[in-house]
Length: 79
Length: 223
Image (tube, rainbow over all chains, first blue to last red; front, side, top):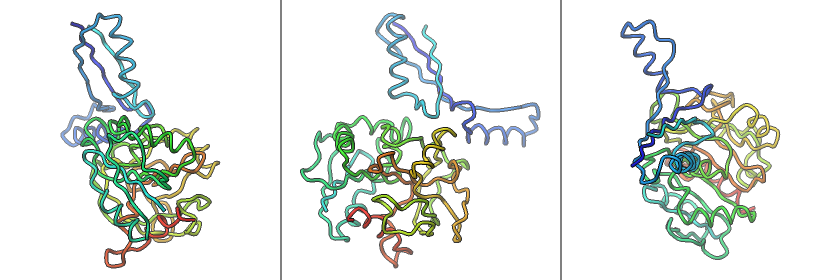
């Protein structure tokens, strides 16, 4: 069994409204040292293929469906 | 005119859209997302508003893979006219049939209200009944209407006259409604046969509902 951990975030330079709201809330709560907050999502896949095959397949899944590459970047970790 | 209105699980504006085009004297057909073909002699395909597949992953991201979308893409590649309203706009951007992407509103709220819109370009099938710089009043209702496109592509969009509508005040000055790049509310593709907008023209057909400004938008396709 191979596990793929995918992290999807809005691209650098694309305003992240959720991150901004959380940053503002942290600031109101007195956490003054926070410079930036980005909120994304993590997608964990369990795959029935070996690691090498998984890598290529998961990349295709990200490009096709799991991320919108117009606005989002993604990272893949295979375990 | 023969209008095909698509239906996905979660679509909820198909009957309003059907009502609108029938009120304007057109024949309509609801087309199920699993259908692999469009009705014969279709003059216009409308991808209506709603929450296709519950917007679970991203708005419109799953609907674009429905069998019917293959037929819609082939239809558009052949020069057929396609209009995407709200969730339909999101589906068409996810499908790569329109440039850019729609993300969460900058204030994170679901925004539902009447909104002024400035007509940016009218040399297209969708807005040829409207005047350039005219201000229209059309309802909006969305959570993911924050249009994004990078600077380089925006420049091309502007140069080609693909920006159709902008959120504005009553005088036509741009206003920030949901965070959209340069207040964009609607765009079309480079060949000007695929149109997408967040506002709902099908909800602005009767004075009793607050506005009749949607009529001329939908009538534009008759010309």
